Length: 184
Image (tube, rainbow, N blue to C red; front, side, top):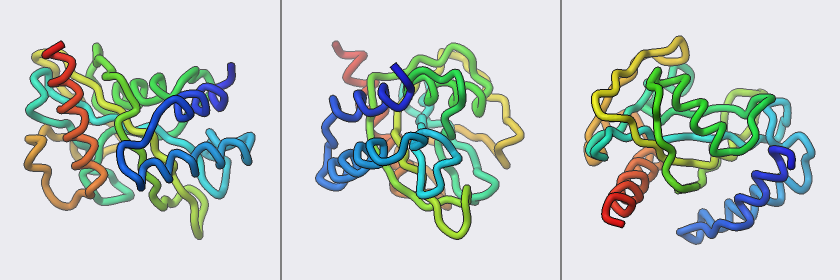
């Protein structure tokens, strides 16, 4: 199964938790059906990406990167690469690369979808973002990468500006998923 086939199967099996995300899910599936290269950065109208909210072991804090191009505090994430087998693989790889934290545990997902304009192919290109959550082991130490201006832990309920609603939503959903997993 190709990464594109896996992504389509993952999205087909998931239901958006809001009407807007359900509409995005259908748009993402349509995109994959219409673009054989829809997983790759080279796909000019847009491409699927994976983002991960990295939580502290207790779910109280989220690790955010100050993104050099967006100039926002955002979760870890990025493009699919050759060798990635699944979107959860992409999400975990990006989270480890950008946080410097080994041993992250990916939560069941996806947790959210987001579509946002990016600078990959001016004048207009879209990231069709499939969003996940991960949990850092106790005592995890972050290591800033060259892809970040800063890397900081913030309380899930007190994410600083500049950020966006998608970041806040993903952090809250990841914390809720972790709390659910801990109680079951």
